[in-house]
Length: 332
Image (cartoon, rainbow, N blue to C red; front, side, top):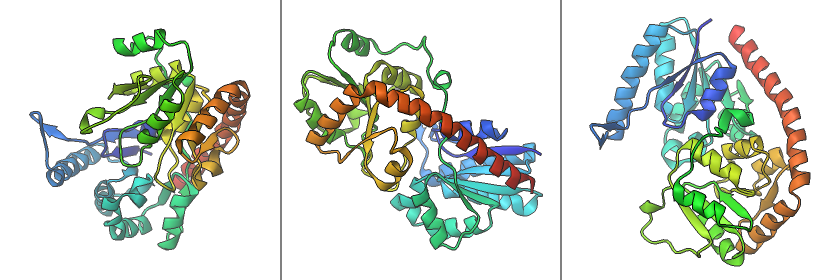
């Protein structure tokens, strides 16, 4: 049985891990630029659809896993299965339910979900959407937890200015997972840094798209760094912040944090608490509370690391069970 995993996105880490576990070939159809210029979104989707169709026709898979959003990638998989002996499985990320631009296409998502072999979602709050739509073939598939050696390349070199900051700081080093997106709490973290002058805060993401940004001397803006450097810097720090203002979201970065066995502070949302109540410290993201939780994460680091190790042992069993379930569905 031939299986593929179709992705229309630049970031494919989650699908790579899932595809590898399911023995599915990754097909990445992503075209953002042509001769250095951004391609208009509508034209980009047309180009990606044609590319996907050609590659599916060449491979002729029996099962197509497809990452959603964008929902139009699923539409290509649907049409392919209409004319070929194949089925598709939709792996919908939280953005597919919550982002405004994709909420507009919920009618299409609903249509395609009802005709899918299976619909996987990343947390129980996302599954509530499918249940309200009358979708019965849904399954909560939490993220895969990678191994340390899968994500950390020891010989990766960090930017020189980052290395200088790391070597010149004696106090606690705090790493913030950040993109400067609307749901990131970077402003709150900067306010927290003002309360902790003895600590050094590394905040990732492309800060140049902001008009103005003011921060104390103990905040280092790394700019955009590739994933390997991102993980390397995270590993060099003492406490990690994984925060989001978007409800019903379970952050992939938490899985990377646990792979590195780092004490971490995250958002106290219902979904995140449900899955990580035994290993995380939760914050309301106000500066004083963040300061207290960071300090507690550091003082309790050995206890937290032990909890993470126990969590991962049980989570491996959960993942194996999930993979067996999906394998059985594709064989039915």
